[in-house]
Image (tube, rainbow, N blue to C red; front, side, top):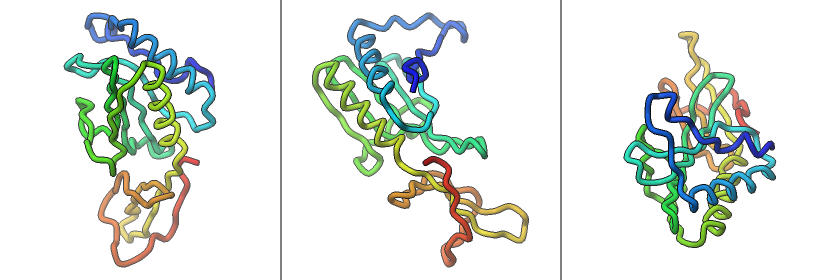
Length: 176
């Protein structure tokens, strides 16, 4: 992957806000994270770098999509605080995280390089996970569906009511 395609800094001036003023540690973290991402062999996913609304950290989120359906399947983010990070699945539009290990949450402390290494490995594992869309037939024309990680069956998104008494009629790979 091209290093410039991962974790580009968004431009707050587009929204009439002051530009980000990333400090030295934040710039070093982003550079190290981008350097690791350049070697990834994973499918592309939207990512960026910025700040959460409260400005408390460097925010680095990644979004999984079903591009064929233009559907967001989930967002995961790292909040970098200089000497420590918090990372996990995003639970709301303010980029607060689900703070449970089942959702991939972790905290870590260390040097900028150590934190970038750990976060890059975490993102790479996430982006490497296969995602499938399970579908059930419906007489109404719409197919109830559930998007899930194929390796664990963990549900990401469900559309309509999915039957609990019948297996899906087909499972389509969304992400390799």
